[in-house]
Image 1 (tube, each protein chain N blue to C red):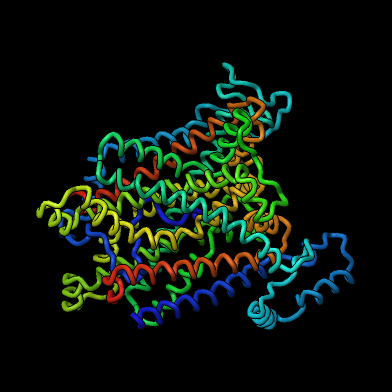
Image 2: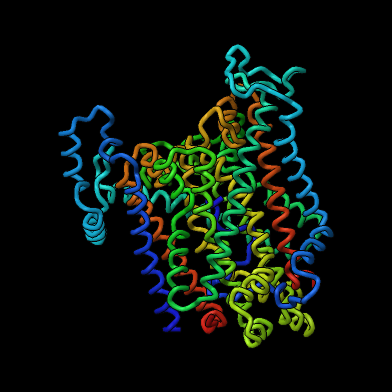
Amino acid sequence: MTAYLVRRVGQAIVVVIGVMILTFIMIHMEPGSVARAVLGIHATPGRIAIFNSTYGLNEPLYSQFVTYVQQVFHGNLGTSYQLQQPVTSLIAQRLPKDAILLGISTVLALLLAIPMGMYQATRRNTLGDHAFTSVSFTLYSMPDFFFALLLIALFSVQLRILPPTVPAAASVGGLLADPKALVLPVATLALVTVASFSRYMRSSAIDVLSQDFIRTARAKGMPERKILLRHVLRNSLLPVVTLLGLSLPGIVAGAVIAEEVFNFPGMGLLFYQAATSHDFPILLGSTLVVGVATVIGNLLADIGYAVLDPRVRYGRP
Amino acid sequence: MAAREPRLGAVAAPEPDGTVGTAGQAMAPAAPGPLRRILASFLENRVAVAGAGIVVAVTLFCFVGPLIYRTNQVTVHLNLENLPPSGKYPLGTDGSGYNVLGRLMLGGQSSLELGFAVSIATSVIGTLYGAIAGLVGGLIDAIMMRVVDTFLAIPGLVLLLILVNIFTPNLFMIIVLLSLLSWLGVARLVRGEVLTLRTREYVQAVKVMGGSKWRIVTRHLVPNAIGVIIVNATFTVADAILTLSALSFLGLGLPPPEADWGGMLTNGLNYLFDGFWWLVYPPAIILIITVVAFNLIGDAIRDSLDVRLQRL
């Protein structure tokens, strides 16, 4: 177990360094200069020179990278070109709101998807199974933004029971104090993830149902309810642990769209606005945060899996 | 679409060490070949055949349709804007006076071309990369896989949003960028397959008989991993079409006068509350049906590959 842990943590560290290199390279692929993009075409050479020296853009690339890494380890992600605020504090303001949005919707998705997948697996190829399959395929194949706007059209415009946007200045407390505004963004993210989670749960449970130990349990006369709860559910939940770790980037990408539709003041919206205004420090900082979060998520999922299932620990390639 | 990483019900290995393989390969009979076996069980599956039928119909609609039903998709006619469906315009016209039915065909061309091109490119790149990593092993494998992990750690849509800012988007550029971001999953899958397959007795036997590495790859490993690759390729088509629509929604898709279904849908959604339903539902329905069809095909092929499922 220790060897596995060390190997896995080592891999995670390498990947985090990789993420830093990748984001750094990408940002510097911008054609023309950052100064031109930010200051506009009427900027004087003097202004450009000041901009470049302020942000250290006139240094050689490798030394910019070294500075960048040093600053990151000191908790400094630079200053936003457009908003003139430290990126760290911009992210710190928004990350808790995303934790609420993504956390609630993921928990909701799991609560819906696990029973749904179990139901489908135990009643494979019945009408109920096909109905749920059709629903999840349609949800999964629908562009998120279209789904979100349909929800707005129904609940905000037709029925007038839910607000279509989240108050832009909402703080974490404000979000929780006004849960009505959260319903639609959470529903959008949850229903799209339910589709993939429940399919996953279904195939995982079908897999477990075909195992020999289930036949043994049935042969010794264990009640079907007990078999499902004690053997099938627990074993088929194992891969879902991995799925949670793996699905983080997907959920974040969904959040970019959902936040743009509902004007939710989270990281996704921050990122999207930065992407359209060439605000590289924000792009770099938030990409790094998401990347590190994903790596940690995957690491925790893998370790959790290894703790729960000893077969993984000893599986050498 | 790189946006939603875990595939519908895909059974992923908990650790990319190839400890989990599809049971379908366990049997690996010499004849009939894997491709024919997949085709045979594919034809037995009604859902998959229906999916394939939809794909063929939509492809014909988009590529042959414009030859029969000629419409103007270049010149803007503001006096014809947002006309409701009529005999002359079966699905009405949009805000620029374009015939919506004709535009669905044009938009479908971009969406489908993108889907197929990205799917083929990622399959080739990912297969080669994964096969090399799995076969060579050791340090090189470790480095290659950490590169994959790095790209996978950042959401594809996030990378795309940065890249689309750097490169001016046109269809070819978006195909290139999406391919560069979508081959990672295939590479992991193929590597996992190669790792399990290369320890099998028949591969060892080829080695003992003096077969070259190249022969092992082309004659034994790739044919046996082809099922996984095909399943992934069909899902990639669906995902790529969805990603393009997401990009269009964010205003970073194809610039006009080019069109894609996602872009048409985004345009239509601006009029959602004006009652111009013909700008919203036709592109939405054709987009969703096409993506569902590709997902159904992929799902059905995967089921047919899994021997354990057939035993139930």
